[in-house]
Length: 386
Ligand code: FES
Image 1 (spheres, helix red, strand yellow):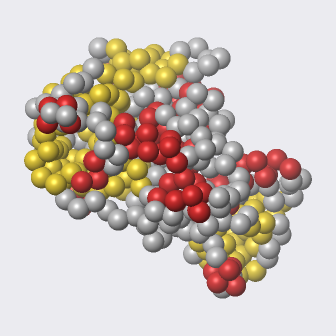
Image 2: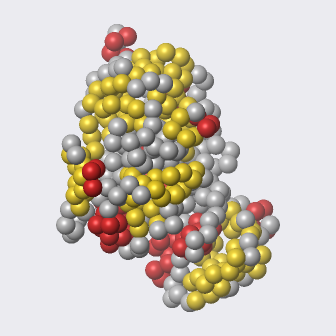
């Protein structure tokens, strides 16, 4: 095969005008330092400014956007479309938080706030990042939109094919919410790149993308996968020693310019791929049965008292501890939200919880009194510390 045929090309470009909603496929895009133009420039937040995403409100993936020259149209099944122009945004300064980054964003319209609140079933507001996001990420020396941590994400079609070969379910690229998709035959070739050029733009490939429960949400039905796929399969060949799983590579644009579908991927510098132990078919037989969403439906809820680091609040015996902590306006560290990574481990000082068997909680940790907040449900009053 000629070198020309072996070369990867850009096969799809996606933007997500509002964080966590469905993507829009484009044929060309302007790359800005903060990410693709129109990508994650809006975000839904609680009234105290904390991000709300489809990790906890999966119905958001059913919201579709249409980009107009002067604004946005947003559509959700059963609701009248929301339409606003950029001119009518209120633009009042609002403090907001994306993970550990706190920065200033801007208010949009009361109609938009109401529209999102009715979908989410909780009071929410739609925020705008501004033309230039105020969120400066010092570690990567650039400003970033409302994206999780990095301005852009790239995944090869061959990597998805390799996942599907290993998984008992068929997965689509839409589950991985990537900006750039590339053609080519070599799975995970993107892991070996350090610097690339696409069209007018040079990119630095900075970090593998850690994946979470959002990848298990079906983009069409907004349902979590009943067996937490693809996280279960990732845990067998794309996991680090802590159980975090990775798929795709985060990019930083070194300059601004246009890219278009069909552009060649010019590899300017390579690096050693990250090493992941391949557990093959042995591990794929391990069952990840954690499904707090399902489990809670079978339980009659009772009111209890939960103490997190001495902060008391009223909880229930129905919802996962992590969900209840967040509803109370507190926080516990988390990543996968599905019992795989261990990021949400806390110590149970007193009381009892229903803790499903999870890969991230071995017997030694259980004996030490640890539980996973993402997939344990309180049975009694409890005291936990993180
Ligand atoms: S967040 Fe990963 S195990 Fe709970």
